[in-house]
Length: 448
Image (tube, rainbow, N blue to C red; front, side):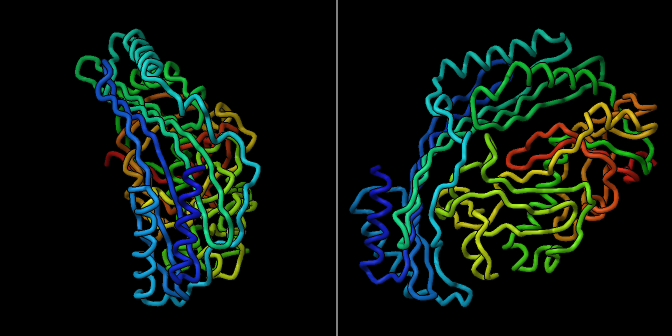
């Protein structure tokens, strides 16, 4: 309540000083971060709280942030940002701030258990996971890992509405292990991002990572080939976010940084491909009742059976295109400018089980983990990733483990003409969700 009073005070102060529009965004975050390996290392809990004021004077817009939150500071910052706005150049594309406030019926984005996590509870869970790795196999030991738990309170107000307030939580775990046998070394890990503490099973993550480390101890690079490739769900989710999540961002489209400019209503993918951005997805990574401008969250159909239907908008980009905002305004922290970004970007699952994706492949490769995806280019569509862990598929069964081979393709061509089968095992990498998929005739570069 005090936070909402401060945001509303800031809006009123800016308007009193001559602003034609005003907005205030405030965020308070409590973060607990732990590093661990064979024992628990650094354990740190911190709190940050700050406010960003946005003042508009006609088409002149300015932002100013502060971490000092009292009435006197709010009055000072309001005066500063109004002065800056009056002296700023006009933005010819400026229309107005968000005018549609409200809360959509979102669930599963706040967990009181995460908010109130005690040190002892975290330590007990981590020690159990460490013990599971050590007991799994004498060849395996824990490697440097991390756990982070966040709880945030967000308040948004502007001169068109009283505003809104929400609480949200999240937990991130990266659990890494190392296996050694003779001269062979294998590193493996499991990553999990969730909204609720009970969705994090640290012991299971420890077992899965240990299993992978043992399996890939003797992985080898093999000759180059063009073959069928099955890509694990979390791996393809990362590729999906990098290669499609950015091109459908309205800001990328409007600035000329997207291959999807002018492609609404045209086929960009296989009929097997349907993608939604679901800001109301229960337990979704970025589920919330309203976005970071106070606009209600929604479910947006992005790709419908291969046809591009929508870009993702915040207030500024939607008004520039003369369309409704999709409720996709995000601010990575309170001092960072608002911009459109996916909420829960989901490749809709198919009917095939993970086993069925492999069963019909006579000669192919299963991709378990990749590295170097960040070298891919979402503007051109060129996808490149090195297979860190994978295995050959022979006659529908897994065979030799492989590594070091490079997966290369044009992503847009891949999703349009090369997707063969889509699995039913939906899983997320942060806000990007995908099932495992099977791709035909994919080029894999290996030994000469």
